[in-house]
Length: 418
Image 1 (tube, rainbow, N blue to C red):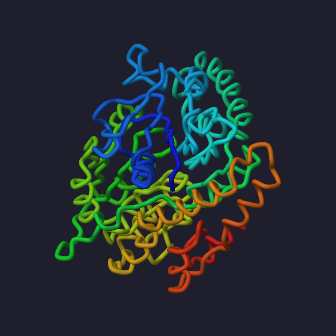
Image 2: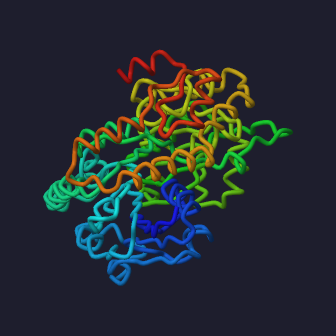
C-alpha cells in the first residue's frame, strides 16, 4: 500500500506486550516513523530503536525517564501537539493517551487499543488510592483523574476505527467510549517460544509481569508459599519494594531478563501464574507456546487464551485460598505439552499481521469515518465474526478472519461471558 503512515505509541520505556504489538505493526510499515510521549534510548528492540522516533516535550522534563508517570496531567497537551499533516494514515497503539492524537480530516486513524485508560476509569484505587499514595494526595489525584477520564471519553471520536486486543477490552471500549471495535488478538512469536523437547519441568512456578498494583502478585506469592513451591518473578515496577517487603517463603525476584532467559524459564517451570485480571495477557500465550500450563484468574483475557483443564487452570473465586487450590490442581496431573503448544499457535505473529492488515486495507478503502457513527458501526460489524468453536475448522478460521472471538471449549467460561 502506497500510504504515508505514522505510528503513535504512549511511551517507549521497555519491551513489554504493547511494544511487541508495536513492533509487529512496524514490520508492516517499515518507512513509518513513531511518535511517542517519551523514549528511553536502548529500552526497546533494535527493530524499533532504528526507526525515526519523535518524542514530546515530556522527554525534556526533569527525571522523566524514571518518573514519567508523575507528568500524567500533562499527557493530553503533549499528545495533541504532534503534527500529522504529512500522513495519509495514522495508527496508534494505546492504553493511555496515544489514541487521542489530532489527525487531519483526510487521514484515517486506526487505534489498536490495549485498554481504555485503566487508572482514569475503574482502577483508580489500585494505582492512586490512599494505601498507595496517601489520603491527601489521593484526594487531589481523584479530581485530576476525573478530568482525565472526561478528556479520554471526549477524544474517542478522534478515532475512525478501534481494534481491541480481546473481547474483554472490546466490552470496555463499548462501555467507556460507546464505540464498537474489531478484535485482533496480539501477536506471540510462536517460532521463538517453543518447548524444550528433552527438558522436564523443574520445581518452580513463574510470573513474568510488570510489578504494578492491578497484577495482584501478592496473591500468587501467598498461594505459592501455601503449597511449598518456589516462585520466580521476572519484572520490575513501582510495586517492587512493597512486594519484596511482604514476600514470605521461597520467592525470587529476578528483575528484567532477556527473551532467551525468559524462554528458558518458561520451558522449565511447573506453571506460569497470572493472578490479576489482564486485558489480554501475552505472557500466558508465550508460556503455552513453550508447552507449559497456566494458572489464571478466570476473568478478562484469560478466558480467551487459556482453555480450562486443557491448557491450564482457571480460578473462579477471587481469593488466595482459591488460587492455592488452583496450584494444587495444576500440580496433580501431567500436562500434554504438545496439545498446549498447538493451542498457542492460533495466536502467531503471522496471524496477527494478516488480520490487522485486513483492517487497515478496509479502513483505507472506506476513508475517514469521524463524525459518521452509523458508518463506523457498519464497518465494525462487517469485520467481526462469531465466537469460535474449539475444533480444527475453527482454528483454521482464526488464521483467515479479520478479527476473532474467544477460542475455548469451556462451557463455564461461555456462561461467564453471557
